[in-house]
Length: 336
Image 1 (tube, helix red, strand yellow):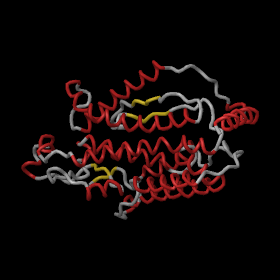
Image 2 (cartoon, rainbow, N blue to C red):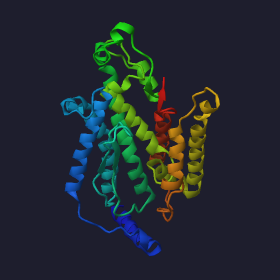
Image 3 (cartoon, one colour):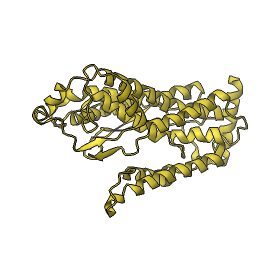
Image 4 (tube, rainbow, N blue to C red):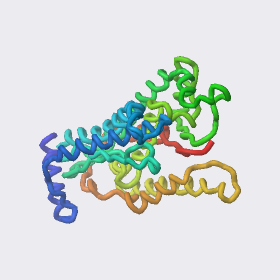
């Protein structure tokens, strides 16, 4: 079986080179210093993000320690996702790079401190099975890491005194339910209902970002949902393409982008006096990014492979769609 897959991969690469010579990827030596340097920079910028979410001055070095827990958690989620892809690729003998972490120090644009990470495929998956495994491994690993972090966060919530230290006025006037808040998704709502807090206090959504485990776990679910969307070369696009083929996956991609577009447009209703909060402008932006940058149609990378996915992989694929629904946040950030 291994030899057969290796032969298929080599044949596929020859065919792709003949059909699309402009897509030829030149192999190069691993750039370990670059990977390490980007990781360190991303650790620094996510730590700044953690300081910001803690309510401190992110650019005061004396506050650096306040962001370390958040930074480690974010990097665990991102690393789980990327190394899920990496190890699946190596199992299928697809040549890939180590993750390139993406630091983002401009907290006024993105207070999470990172744009995630990417790995680069230096050879291509030769079979439908290989492409599915590589596509599905990353988001599932990142999702599992996010779930574990959220569970720990909910069952180890500190008492309300922790919030009083950040907002001393709350001790006198009560917790203020006002300001920017993270939106709920099904998993977050479920965990709030079923996971016991050690002290009975559950912070409102406009204060969740002060709690590193909850903040990082929420972010992990959010980026998992983004990647799971079945369109183009997103992870969800790889999954739907290998499950349903080029034609059906493209139809599904158009449906998803259409839903995102509608949710984005509906978020503009308050501007014309309709005070209903449905969707978010973020989804309109994401729909445009998918349409014009990522593309809705998946490239015909394994159309030559006539063998469909086995039952186990199909079940895993359907499970990822359930994960997308459970993790999707209709209104990511809103004003309370």
